[in-house]
Image (cartoon, rainbow over all chains, first blue to last red):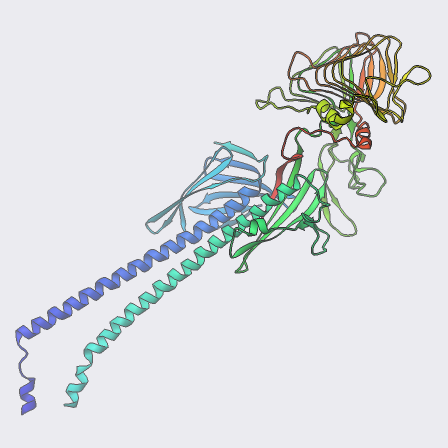
Amino acid sequence: MEVKNNEEGITLVELMVAIAIIGVVIAALYMSYFTAIRVFGFNQKTVEFHRDQRLISESLGKYIRSADEIILTNGNELLIKYTKDGTTNTIKFFNKNNYFYIDNDSVERKISQLELKSLSFNEVDGIINTEITLLNNNDKYNFVEQFQPRIKDVSILVTP
Amino acid sequence: MSKLKKEDGYAVVLAFIMLLVLMIILTAVFSLVSNEIKFVSHARDSIKTFYIAEAGLEYASSFLSSLDLSDDSIWNDTDDDGYKELTDLSEVNGIVTNKKLDSVVITNINNNEITLKSTAIHDNGLKKEITVTYDKISNGSDFTNYSLVANGNIDLKNKVIIEGVVDDDHLDLDGDGIINKDDPDANNDGIEDPVNSIIEYEDEETGVISYYDTTPDYYGDIYTTGFVTEKNNTNLINSSVKDLSTNDDLQDIVPDMYASVSSQYEDEIDDSDGSNGTFYKNTIPQNSEGEYDFDDDVDVVYSDTDLEFKNGDIIKGNGILLVNGNIDFKNGVNISTADNENLIIIANGDVTFNNSSDFSGMVYASGKIYIKAKVDVQGSLISKTAIEETTISINNGGNDPSKIVYDNSYLKIFENLGIELPTIENEFGYDLEIVSWQE
């Protein structure tokens, strides 16, 4: 009998208080959950951008420094002739189907995993300036770098 | 009672589940960030190590310019692999931590090229190697490599012949007894090599492929900061004109040889007694036939004033005539040298040849050089005058042309007498230009 009595009657007030408390707790958790997911997503994108940027600028830097001859075409294609172990090789950096590609003696390779939004090369006083924009979903990542060819008599040809 | 107890823990379980979800997210973010940190610090180390290797090259190239490879305290083959490496790297390594310049090694020297390999290592094992080939560009100290050199205009008239020489000091790569540069087929593939080209040569035993520049090296070019005027069929053989007149950044290409040589005989010149051993002051020793003879007992004849040789004078040379003023070889003066003899004429003024002569050696004038007769010189004519109308003028006036054939055998006189040739004021003996870069 006593037990029965105890089970009777949660008042409306009690119920509302309980719902309110649970609501507040869930709202707080929900917010922090989504913030955490957002931070995670942001970090992941940054890492992806950095990885691609580094791959691109390492290969650009290495070949521009070794260049005997640089040909800039159309402001978005960079062709470099360089000497390795006594032989002359050619490498081309360009945009293919919106990805960053290199063509090393007719072997094409995709360097960036991310979509390439824009690619531009120009030359000022013997320095090669690059401006590259990568696209990751809807986020844009833009980086500008300068490279100096090391070989003194490097010929830099700019063609429209 | 027991039923109630079980329902009590519901809040705790809920809290744990929520905590778990949050922990998972936190862990994921943490690992992502720590990966990013590793990634970025690797990038940083890689870039820094690269620049340490480059710093090593810069540092080493400052020692290359003097190219005193015999000095073991600078360049030494510490690991006996046959390649000299920079001994002291502390200058570079003193300013960096965690990473160090491991070695800078000279891997190849040939003709005008030096190849250096610089290696830098980071504590985490990251290694960067740069191989660079420098071309040595002489910056004027080798003014003796030219047949005619002047800080001014050069005027050539009346079929004057200027002849350079081809450097034949090259390897016989294919062992057929023909020196490569003159070999029409240096790599023995049965096809004549194109002139002035790089050919590929494969060593049959080792299979090593090397590349060889068949372009001949010429010496005896005409070199001037002014203009070269050629009239009436001037004839240049193996000799071309290096004309800096269009260069905005004009600089002296001829050092002051009079000042340099006279400073090395300062004591003798100041000595009031004059002649001293093989040094003669204001007097030229004559042999029994009355000829001015620079023989073995005469090294240097010095005059502190203008000098004029007159009709009938005969000068036989193997030595240095040093004059603080003009030298005038009048009509009827004959200058000659026997085989292996060289006469070096150094004037702190103008030098004029009025009569035909044929000699080996060098003529230096801080002023102008005039050649008004058929004068054949096997050597160099050097004038220091800043640009004036003409600083070297060769005009013999007849049909029999003067002939200047480049020959630097007069350098052995300077060498024998221990006279150091002056160089154009420059920190280095030559400049280094990067012609190849490989990472």
